[in-house]
Structure formats: C-alpha cells, structure tokens
Image 1 (spheres, helix red, strand yellow):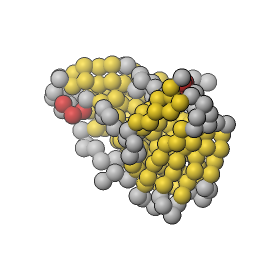
Image 2 (image 1 turned 180 degrees about the horizontal axis):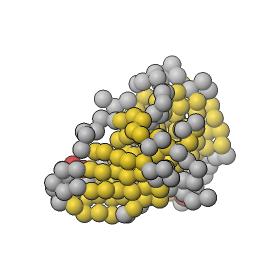
Image 3 (image 1 turned 45 degrees about the vertical axis):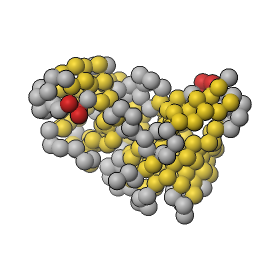
Length: 113
Length: 113
C-alpha cells in the first residue's frame, strides 16, 4: 500500500523551460511534505518543504504547491537548468514523536541543453 | 559544521551473515533515522533513535536492530542477511524538535550474495 506516489518515473524538459513534478498521497495524517533531490552515489538533499496548512511555498527557482482536497502536491522548477538533472523524491512527514518520512518512488528529471 | 557521514561506503556479504553499518549525525543533531532504499524505489523507514532509544519503527523484522551512542552517532545491525537485504542504507539526522528538516548521509551500498 503506497501512501506516497510519484506516477511519472521520468521527465525530460528543455533548458529554460518549466519542470513540473507531481506527487499524490493517501494519508491525511501527514502534516509536512518535502522534496528531495538525489544524485547517483549521494544521499538525498533537501530542497523545499511545505506545511499541510499552507498551499504554496517558494524558494528561488523552486515552488511547491499543495492541494489538500485532491491530496496532491507538485514541485515547479523555473527556469530549469542542466544541473537540475537528478532523481526527485517527494516525501511526507508523519505526525507524532517519531516523525518518519514516507517517500515516493522518485522521478528522474533530465534537463536538456 | 560537519555533515552526516556513513561507513563503510560499500559492503559485500553472503547470505546468513551479519552486518553493522555506522552513521555520524550532523553536529548538534540528536535524532537519527535509518532508511533502506532498494533499487528503483524510494527510501523506506526502518527505525529512529532518540536519546539512545528506539523511537519508532517501520515494517522491518527484528533482525534489523540499532543503537545510538551518547554522542548521537548510530549503528544499524542486520542479522541473518537475506538476498533481499541488498540495498542502499541511508541515515538521516535531525533535531528532535525540528524533524521537518532531516539531513541524509551518502549511504552504504550493501550487496548480499
């Protein structure tokens, strides 16, 4: 039972254009959502997060949108750069004392020069 | 400020053996979480340690165990290794009061033959 789903295993975008990565979740008890970026042979690197009480959070080229009624979030990267090419993981943080991250399966983003 | 470090980087074991993986948390972080990432999947939560005690556990059998030391570093032990234990093992550190931001180490790649 996958509580966090990334339905697109890969995405290719032209440099300078917008990249949109999508994520769906099923558990209403998640209270924070995060995006991580992962290069081969490295651990995931935190990118941006959003609290469940907000619908948008922006940090430079990265914006995360949360639609609670649809249990959907998306990461927008504008403009996309070749260095953004990596695997992007959506993760949800559970409430409670042990705040475990539940990850999606990732989306490989390739930004073409 | 040092980041999260893990050792060893790679390990090859045979079925039935035991393995110990190590993690040093980021300076000042008192909470360590361990994740297993199988090929093509997102990381899966194994357990979390806080104040030298297990503070939450995912869906992993008891042969996965851990320790946390007074300096907040941590070990993951896996007994009776199975072929399916082959994965990237990641640890993440955070402050117990700010688990919205978890910093990951580079991981240990374990291969079980």
